[in-house]
Length: 61
Image (cartoon, rainbow, N blue to C red; front, top):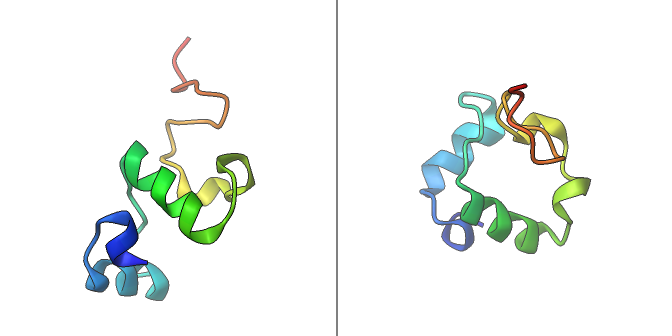
């Protein structure tokens, strides 16, 4: 998984243990979706930065 999305194995371990919050670029998020065979809309909101929603809005009006 780490190689597929371009992060260190230790980063994945910290995510799994709750020691760090997942932060991914758009391209990493796309690769993550491929790796877990899910669409972006199927991902839990907890994987998204707090200022981004699934409809593409960044929370600004």
